[in-house]
Picture 1 (cartoon, rainbow, N blue to C red):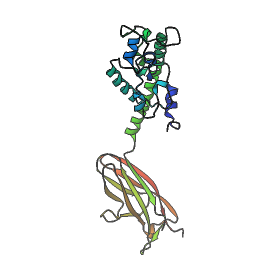
Picture 2 (picture 1 turned 90 degrees about the horizontal axis):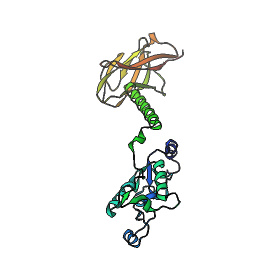
Picture 3 (picture 1 turned 30 degrees about the horizontal axis):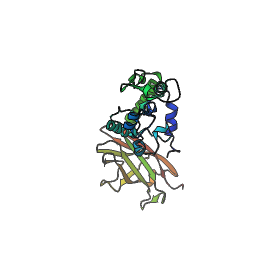
Picture 4 (picture 1 turned 90 degrees about the vertical axis):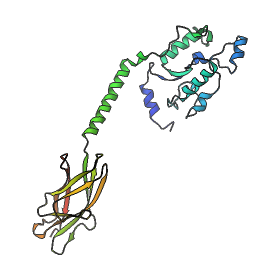
Length: 288
């Protein structure tokens, strides 16, 4: 999943120097030491990181965020929480691992190095407090062109989805003609076709859907599941957010038969909401 998932690549393409990403602030964490008190007594330079590996232990992908940004990072921020807990226990400010921008990170790194290439903790703190030159999170980074473009782009996507959901059909009918036999000749000479009709109620309320037949002169319907004599319209109750499948037989008397195939419509209609859906079906008869 690490190498096949497209999300890290998509995310990387959307980032810039002012994007907030999970960052190990080595400008205050280095050099690492497990004995902060001994280092302080001996006058050795020591950063805030005590090399406890708590950030590595909680990472679901097993990376060490202290090695920098990596493809495997899913920005879950578990390392931030784990590190903050450790910082609280050792009496250091939280945020050794935090959301930070590359611009602020580079600036703070330059302050920590004092124009050189080696981090000096003395450049970061004076009398236990961060020097004024150190940059911290500023909410105003959200008010820039890139984030506004992204915001409006996602807002348009969300609006499109909302419109699609509100405008979608809430009633649907689907019809499948029996394949074998295609038609049956009854004792009175009329021809009968069988269909599987599926009525889909896409609202969270029960309703009665009227199934009717149009475009096939003289035809009548019979539905096994409905206790009603043959006719051209049936009232069918459908449960909320459910699909109801019915076995429907359409019969045409001999005097009204058209040879070969005849097109007709099966119409599903809710007479309370005036919603309707139609399916163009085919009636098969002998070709003579």
